Image (spheres, rainbow, N blue to C red):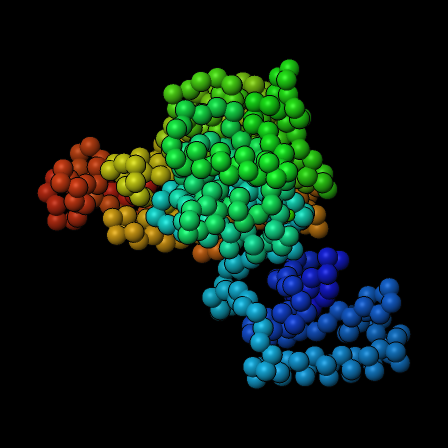
Length: 468
Ligand SMILES: [Ca+2]
Ligand SMILES: [Zn+2]
C-alpha cells in the first residue's frame, strides 16, 4: 500500500506505507495518482482536515467520522472521475519519467532526500565530469563535461530536481574541455549558462589554456557576471586579499568548503593541478571532490589541510587515473564510497589495458579502504561510438530521518543502471587479450583477440589480496 500526501513545498509524495522515504515526488496530485496507476500500486491519500493530519485507515478517522466520510466520498468521486478521464485519455498528462518498468527497477529520480550528490553520465563516449548536488533547495553544478553535446543530457537530468531554473552555485574545477565544454552554447545548442540563472560562480585561479572551449567559457561566464552573478576564483577565497570565506553556508547545517591547495596561485605544467577542490559537509558526513588534481596537487592539499577529516565519499581524482588518488590523501580521508566518472575501458587516452580509466593502480590503492567503487559509464566500442551505463548516474544521498547509531545521517547509493560494486561487475572480470607490454592493440591499431599470436588472456582488473 502506498500513501499519497501533500508536502510542505506544495508537491506531492508517494510513500510506501511504513517507510520514511518517499518513493516518488510529483509536481501534482494527478501526477502522483497517474504514477501509482501506471505502476499498479494500491494507494490511498493522507488527507488534511484543518490542522490535523488524518490517515484514512487510522483511529483518527473514526474521531472525525461525521465530517470525514462525506469529504472522503466527494474526494473519491472527484479523483475516481479524474482517474477515469486520464485512463481513457480524455485528460492528457505531461510526460512523466516512469523508468523501465518491472518490480526491481532502479529509480531514475531519487526523491525524499535532504542532501544528494549525483555523478552524471554525459551522453557520449568521452570521459568527463559533471556533478550535480542538491542541498535542500540549493542547486549546485560542478563541471559540465565532457563535450558541448553533453549539455542536453546534463540539463535534462538537473531539471528533474532543479525546479526554479536557478543554480545557486556553479563550480568549474579547471579549464579542460572534459570539464567545461557544456557550460557554453553553440549556435544550435544551449549550454548551462544560457539555461540557468546562476547566483555564485566559483572557478580556477590559474590556467595555461588558450583553447576555444576555454574562451567560450570565459565569455559566457563574464556575461553571467554582468547580469548579476557573483564570481570568485579559488585564489580569491584565501590569503590577505580574500573576498569571501572559503566556507559557504548552504543552510540546514550543510556547508560547501573550498579546500586550499597551492596551485590556485602557483603555476603547474599540468592543467589538472589547478583543480578547485571542494568538500561538502552534511549530517556529520564529508564528501570530497578534487577534480583532476594530480599527485603534486594532492600533496599540497594534504599539507595545507592537516585536519582534513574522514570522508564518507571521495570522487576519484582525475577519472581514476594512476596519477591521482594517492596514498597520502586516501590515508587522511579513508573513504567509504569512491565514485569514478569515466567511460570505463575506453582507449580515448591509452592502448594499455591497466592504464585505461579506472586504472589498476588506482584500484590497488583504493582497495585498502573500500570495495564500494562505482563507475558511471562503459566503453563498448570506442571507434564506433558505442557506450553503455556501467552503474549509470550515481546518486549518493541522505536525509535527517535516517541516522546511523553514532547520529550521523545514513548514506545510501542508488545508481540508474545497477548498484553492483566495481569488483563484481562484468567489466572488471571480463577477459581481455594483451601483448607483453600490456597493450590491447597491435601496431596497426587492431584490437587483439583470442586468436592473435603472442597475447595473453587476463581479467580486465584484479582485486589485490590485501584489499577489503
Ligand atoms: Ca535553485
Ligand atoms: Zn578530466
